[in-house]
Length: 252
Ligand code: FPP
View (cartoon, rainbow, N blue to C red):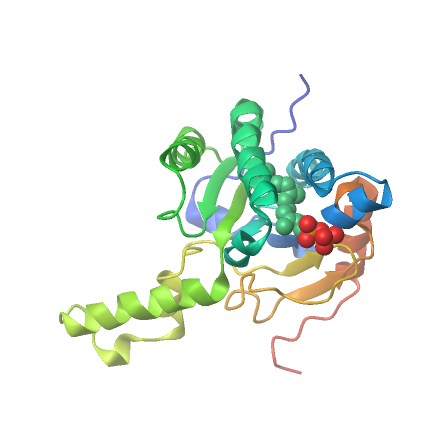
């Protein structure tokens, strides 16, 4: 098996400096259009999700090759529970199968898996799998692959606010200590740099409760490509578009 291992040095300064092309440190992807991809082919929607997993594999490998340190994918939102039961169950099953089948390969590629999102309502076997993926790859130094599963940015911000309110109430924190940095530390993405770029496929142009705090200064690339068709060339085109942007972070 060919491996694309590009380790990031483990000392914090070097990790801070590690960047991919165009200075990219973190890319978030909203993988949209699976259902439409399937319907266009006269197939049930679940086939689109299955093809979406294949696209995801290719994209993760490309990230390893490019040396971009962080990738976050939106694989299941807090709101996705409102889909038909069969589709929800297929998405939960796909995540389980993805971890069971791909964990060894991700580990061999030096990928560190991190999962964000609410776990209390997930089944014990799924939670165990997520924990296993994180524990097995915790010491890896290549791509940090963040899987947002049962994730919602509003819920995440509310949880952070509640944790800080409790800390103030019990005297572990003063109100003055509630700062942007403190809130960021209470988010599930604590320690992960803010995304430089958010890509959304399928032509839709919205954030859909994905990394709302963290994306304050992110650039957005919306591509009409449906997620199952999102290949290396489509990713390279999105990165090229990002490369042409001037980021000002509110300055001049
Ligand atoms: C949006 O397409 C996609 C999702 C809700 C799920 C994304 C999931 C995958 C790509 C596969 C599962 C991921 C893992 C990690 C196993 P849509 O169904 O909303 O498409 P549509 O807008 O065309 O209907």
